[in-house]
Amino acid sequence: GQNIDQPTEMTATEGAIVQINCTYQTSGFNGLFWYQQHAGEAPTFLSYNVLDGLEEKGRFSSFLSRSKGYSYLLLKELQMKDSASYLCVGLMFSGGYNKLIFGAGTRLAVHP
Amino acid sequence: DADVTQTPRNRITKTGKRIMLECSQTKGHDRMYWYRQDPGLGLRLIYYSFDVKDINKGEISDGYSVSRQAQAKFSLSLESAIPNQTALYFCATSDPGGGGEGETQYFGPGTRLLVL
Image (cartoon, rainbow over the protein chains, first blue to last red):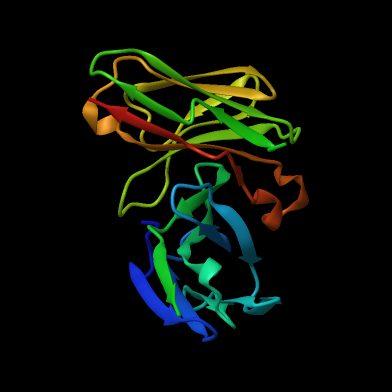
């Protein structure tokens, strides 16, 4: 199987730090994306990891452990505009090509 | 101007009607995709096309058909709409020539479809 598991909802306070975890099944794994999706809008690319370790991009960082089938997205200095769903997306090689397998998303609510 | 556009943005139709959702892109990407999104579920792939002559079924293609009229245009049709096809539909494009991160997909704004 190619399940992507992440929490359904999280809440956090403006200015704080939040970590959104994701686990995936490793068969055919070729990389891990995080997308942000505001309600009713298109998903937009945040990050991509293929090697173990932490990738930092401003307030957002993404971590990957291939051996554990685990990733997290770290959001620092939270702002109200960060309220959105965060999609953990596996890049899996299957059927002769790479395809994206989407988690259901973690809905993050940032409150004052 | 948006790189990936979808029309219509919202559509209400009745059971049994045939409808078409359209997607256009100015990114020059060869690969295009159609997904649906339902509450509590991840995006699910309906159809994908790697170039104008290459169209493939995704995981949930039953009840849908597609047409790749040109590199820039990829249309999704519901031949006879049913209520459980009520969903948010997204078109996406990619150009994976650059390796892993090149598999990044770029999404249109979505079409919200309600089938009564």
